[in-house]
Amino acid sequence: MATPGDNAVQDAAAPRRRRYRVHHLAQAKEQGTKITMLTAYDALTAAVFDAAGIDLLLVGDSIGNTMHGHTTTLPVTVDDMIPAARAVAGAAPHALVVVDLPFGSYEAGPEQALGTAVRLMKETGAAAVKLEGGRTVAAQIRAITDAGIPVFGHLGFTPQSEHALGGHRVQGRGDDAAEALCADALAVQEAGAVAVVLEMTTVEVAARATEILRIPTIGIGAGAVTDGQVLVWTDMAGMTDWTPKFARRFAELGTALRQAAEDYASEVRAGTFPDAAHSFES
Ligand code: KIV
Image (cartoon, rainbow, N blue to C red; front, side, top):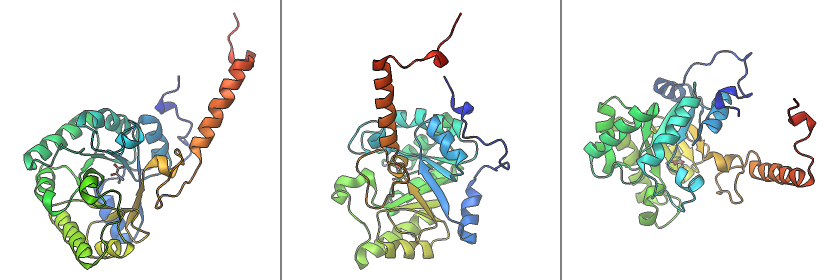
């Protein structure tokens, strides 16, 4: 069986790429270079996205929806995140790997947050962590940052709070909401975050946050105004029937995979696979 290291996606003739690090985030913002980020949950896809030149790989707690069959991210645990993040970090020699602190692993306070972040860093090989929230988790971001661990913030629609937010709703609509979101963004920055994800916000508030922050904004459903973009890879590659309004299907992998499985099954049933070319003779 092939292993991720065997991937044909590695191009030996390509110029040597340096690992993406946190100082490259600041450089990208300064130079106006768009930052690219995709989720990854396993070694195979991580190797493909790393070879494709994606800057950042997010081992998101969206693993709960995409890989574990949950309807929200709430059931995801630190024990779920660790093997996924270890696989991604081990298969991505160039991308900066960010791992989510799942629901329940940091809200109690800075001590809990730091304990979780340290465990994730020690046991996975990821280079940064991400957590959801603004002013209410600033102390957590500060504690993790002070321990030398880069932190990504996450504002706007924060899936771990989907019940409090009343479902998947665009955030930052109206002056008060926009002002609150910008205050949260500034708090996250002042607490030491290296970047902030803005999910499902109006384009106007994403533009305002991007303008007032020194750190880069990475948008998902926040328009083209942010310093970078992130998508859940299964949305980006068309793995599922339904795609959120903000995600474009850059491929139809779900259809291609189903076709491959149907072709395989029909050849097995017809007795045409395996043929002589795929069999061993004495
Ligand atoms: O878990 C995740 O995939 C995320 C993205 C939606 C940014 O947090």
